[in-house]
Image (cartoon, rainbow, N blue to C red; front, side, top):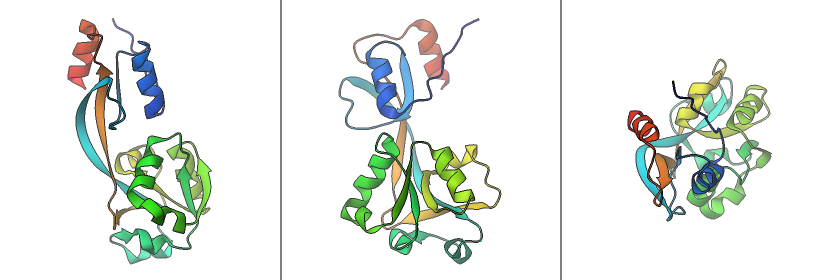
Length: 171
């Protein structure tokens, strides 16, 4: 008998929803930039390279080094997305040596562009569960391997309602 509203927003927006009491808790990327929020890490996941099965990199199989992507058109998410910041931080100055030709807001858009042959993209491993992978392959990225931590965030100042606490415990 309880209604649940799901906000499918960026990590920054989810934090704002918690801070202004629109949402009691959020499930999102964990970052050190949330000192005012209680953070409970749930899992770590790697980023993978999404490419067509017919692409030369896919035909090699196995792991892909970031250096292997030199000169290949890439699709990346915008700075609004927490995933982009994690990748940029992990790559450091090397990020500027890659051909980031396209920029989009959503992973689904990047995946569609890969399927259309526009370029390759880097996505969190869990994201491929929501993508039509026919004709595509996800390959592990190394040197460096990039991961993200997913966690539950809530306000340090406001206790959760009993229903929100029960739902958080289920999650």
